[in-house]
Length: 450
Image 1: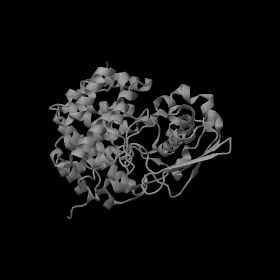
Image 2 (image 1 turned 180 degrees about the vertical axis):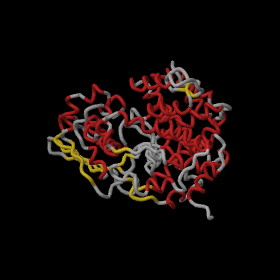
Image 3 (image 1 turned 30 degrees about the horizontal axis):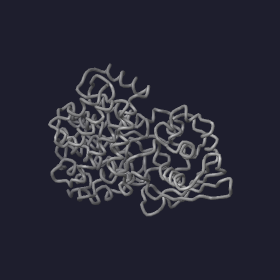
Image 4 (image 1 turned 60 degrees about the vertical axis):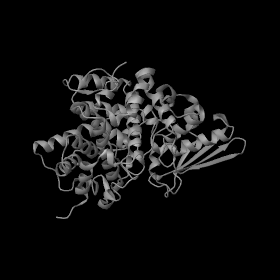
């Protein structure tokens, strides 16, 4: 039988070798790992995530760390807790090309398995690069239904791929693990995000847990579908699935998805980011404040219309409200993590301004396009002026990158309170030489409690 797309994908996962990759790919992977660790550490301090970590410790001892906490648990529970914490503040990286947020769906599980097995830093990086590629490419190939929030969906397969790589599976075993994982993928709507129900944060945690489990189910002799992705995404969660898109350009130098990602510099859903960049640009160029604004219009991709509620009820819902995020940017000059804390979400000035923000759709806009604006913003002022700005690629994307020092600054800002200054520097330095670590415990030992 001729090799199909899943055979090629599984062969790629089993064959990834750091020494065969461009230096730029390896450097990008280290940046992604550091950014993901920062997001997890920052989210680990939220009450529900701290409670979740304590619960995980009751499930029995293990060798895998809970970032920001003491004690160790089995890999599946470490992935569950760490990935859940990593999305709580909406600061984790992602892929505009597809797959949503590949690293938070792959890296926590990969780190947990690697720590459990005493894997090297090189092996960890190889597994994350492979799992990231799988997650993003399956996402690219899927035309998701509008009502489906694909958070967690593709990541189950990505974590299974990363786990298979760390367990030394061959291509056939890897294919089985990935197919098993797809049949265990979460299926969710956008409603929890819009209501601000924090069960939404569990999606990548479930993804990591079940991705690791899928690899072990294969070892136990369980069998999966012949083509799990097509079965799920062609009709249930998607309107179509393009098998050829999964492997188009697979493994070509410079094309790895982990180096074509985006990093977040606003603590909210990506659909906000182009508009926030536009507002930030206008604020720097013109002189106006909240009291000067009579109306703001934001043109955005059609899906963003579900994110038009100007009166979000809580922190998570505010992160999925374009009017709130835009208003916070005008009032505070920033949409960082502090702008979405509960006390700020209830700020009267911000809430009043949010009511003046209208979101309209441009059917040509898509976050998967790089040749057309992702947002246009028009700010009408009381003095009769109208300020306009458009953004095609938001800051932090690989096609509109920030310098490395700004990435490190983000890590220091979101992780510093958890680690302290000295350990923050140690983590940065350790990730920078991750490919030379003999055991990933050299890194994870730095990620517990102060």
